[in-house]
Image (tube, rainbow, N blue to C red; front, side, top):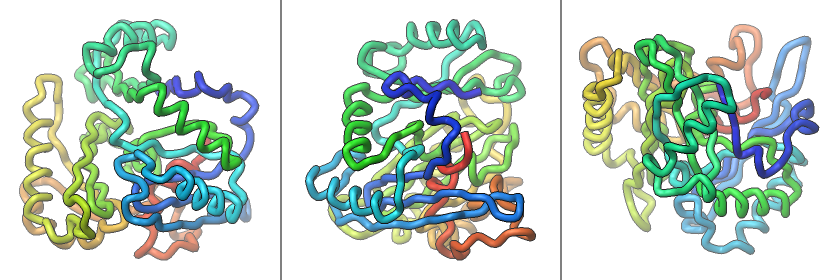
Length: 320
């Protein structure tokens, strides 16, 4: 169950019926995917990517507004993007879990608002949030929500920038949620996602289709090094996250899968697979199209080596 309160900034009803692009904006690149229909099934109608100059965007903060808007404007015009579900930088979003008293939207919303300041350094007035209710098979029967919170001022500026280049955002979403929608098989068994990006990596725990944990670490500062040169540190970080999850009092099952995604997924996986292949945990590269296409019936125009780069945009582009 998903309730988005980023919609407070722009009324969604008249946009929901239109087709939209999935638009990922991260520190080093902009990517987009849009779906169409072919022979009664869904297909990729267009896709594109654009690298960004080093340092132009850092942790979601734009360092040169004019240069960034110039690049984004060209990208939007080139791909004729009008409506889009857009990724939010993970560094700007807080994620926490909390027990709630009701799964009725209004009551759950009020319950979460009362608890915001206990969990994040933002007041209800200064923040916007959305939440997913975790399956009871995951929580041991408890009614619990996974809540994502962002500063209202950041969201307002983010939306204003999109509108200035001609994009109407129909939703804003964190990358792990988009990745879950496109590439993570639905299961109540917790899965650890390793999002291998340039210069940083995201570690996410997903259970029952809901993002339960998110952490993003920069591996370097001011250089072109990536986690490809730091397999030992990545293995250590994965161990830390697994230990954290296994010792939580409300956790009812251990991590069963580790899936690698992102532009450096193949190299990161090859550098850490032997160290991670222990016990009953399965380690593999995620299939970007897991929940989107039957690859025996349709072959996407994005080759397999590049598909992992588009995993976020692919999830964002799926119908609401």
